Length: 213
Image (cartoon, rainbow, N blue to C red; front, side, top):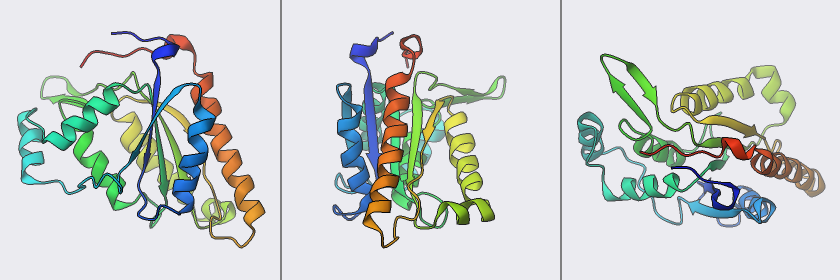
């Protein structure tokens, strides 16, 4: 099944318990920047998504089907999307457990990829472009000195995005999110929002192709 620009949809996923958080503010700023394209927001905390990988998830994974209803709902939502933007606070140099659990349960064998003894792993999400917008407490110098940004990019861009076959989009950090200067924070947010929105809008129409699942 193919789609053109008029049918493209960006799914913005957030995972923060505080509606007044900087993370949710960033998502709120991002949505109008993505328009006039279609945008949907998945607030995992507000929607009470259960991140726990249950025995039912395990059975579905091993049997390649029969996913729990909440996972099927997320599959349908992602099937409509051409772009995925993950907006999240950095917890311990990674993503929050809620977002990690969403990925654990949703991006599974039989939907995001196939595994067989004959062909190994075959990614299935080539139609999707994934963008990252991490909100980090430390400044960019700290991330550079200690290798935190490279580690985060490796685990998410390579370990997740590449594994399921998604294209890599923009990765735009909001650094020093707890700094006292509101002006500096606003500038950092504006830069990150601009980088992601421009990456979504500038993607060639020819790349907006979905594959049937």
